[in-house]
Amino acid sequence: MAINLACDATRRENRRWLERLLGAALLLDALWIGSAELWTRHSAARLRAEENGLRARTAALQIASRDARRLERQRTALQGQLAEATRRRQQRQQAVTVLLQLERVTPQGVVLQEVSIDATRCRIQGVAQAPEHALRLAEALSGFTPCPARGMAARDGARLPGYAFTLTSGKDTS
Image 1 (cartoon, rainbow, N blue to C red):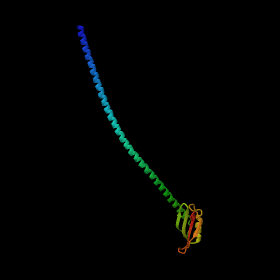
Image 2 (cartoon, one colour):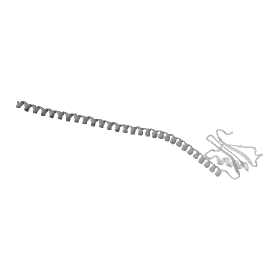
Image 3 (cartoon, rainbow, N blue to C red):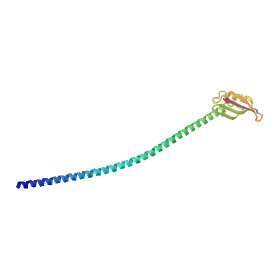
Image 4 (cartoon, rainbow, N blue to C red):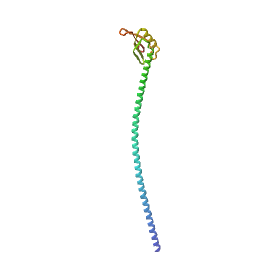
């Protein structure tokens, strides 16, 4: 019986130790499940925050992209306006150059009344004190780069004092 009592005491002690071990295991399991749940919640909250941040950045990028496209259209329009302004400035400079050249080659006694120069023809109208002055202008214009004079027509100068003339060159010499 003493052996049975000793065995019973050992069994009880082993049982208590096993119960403690199982209790500790259950406690560890509960702690592990709880920490996993906390980690999952924390991770989900962090991912939601990142997702919201990404959505905000995406919206900002869409706005920036729209602005970039708008600015590109404006830049293209401004380039067109700049090209047009440059073309007009060059035309004005060419016109000034032509007028300065005409001033240099126009002889004394000749008044130019109208000068019309375009891509296909040139027409100069004026009044000279004598036909010789108009001929001198025609000779001077023969080497004139913008429109060398190729024809000369005299008009009736009865209404104007002096000799009225028209110098033309190009396709339309009427």
